[in-house]
Image (cartoon, rainbow, N blue to C red):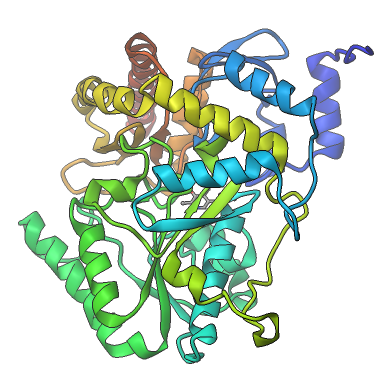
Length: 463
Ligand code: PMP
């Protein structure tokens, strides 16, 4: 067998600069910053072509579950390779796709009974939107054609997903390309517009705003789409009970509820799905990321019988869901997803996250000693640390200071890879990280934040 040729860092850098356009990346800044080029992974660590090791502090974009090079997952792919790599789900099926669909229904919130596969989180969202839109058409109610979404929402980068997104920096420039959606505030407790101190009252006000919009416009709203923890919008968990209240409002106003569990699904928040914290079953649920443990691009959109039945008809009625991708239900991906879900069970991984999250919360508390840590938000292993110029007034740092980026750079020097969201330092360790590993990662976080914020203070004071 031909061995892969090895290249020096300099050669690979040249080729990256010449040929590769990285996602969500200002290439000018990236290329000036001696980018890391990964060659290998081992457990919770990534190893670059120069042999440097880093903690995978954001689980390779929020999706790694057990770590890298997991023997059981490697083996599942090899075993499937001996049978077939890919066929199609268009008009036929395959063994691992059927078994994975069954498994997903078994572990999903009760009532979600059908699984539609795709290849990325954005697609799983697009499909959810198309299902909700067509559901009302199939029922003869085409006027219900609009979507309710949350301010600062993020649901992926394809045009439909961007249409229900609401992060100005990422989405605004595409506005002429998008379909309109109705945006309602997400219940953020750290920064909210109400002059109220009591959190319960603040939550009530947010809910009242939501209800007012539904009451006025339910006749034209197909669905509400929500993230249980607003991810790219700043790592903000919904207050306890909020999703349940939304479920009830959706029932009351005859609006479908789509829950985007792309980031929160598969144990990330300390339950298999974040909906479970509130005992909620959505009408449609989108999942991706952790489904294959971080190995291969598989995503899924789950729906209830009520939804599926609205599409089940004679062909001539044109109620078919006209959607599908070439690689949908890919056998290698489904096989590794099945092996991943088996490991979740045999290793009691969700329980591990729940237990370790308390320890992690204690460790993260140490960061509060640092006076520029404004807020620490945590749901399981999904963590955002918001840096502020002034903790008392919650004044943000000027954008140009790029404090989040500076902290990530320092973490990298100290041996951990992170990717911030503005001045929110995102920390999403692989779910199987041990207590010792988590402690090591938090130590790096502490040192990086302490040094970068102190450095900034010194520069501001002209020292
Ligand atoms: N929805 C949410 C909530 C996400 O966080 C993401 C990705 N971070 C997506 C959708 C899009 O997923 P993908 O990048 O796999 O398209």
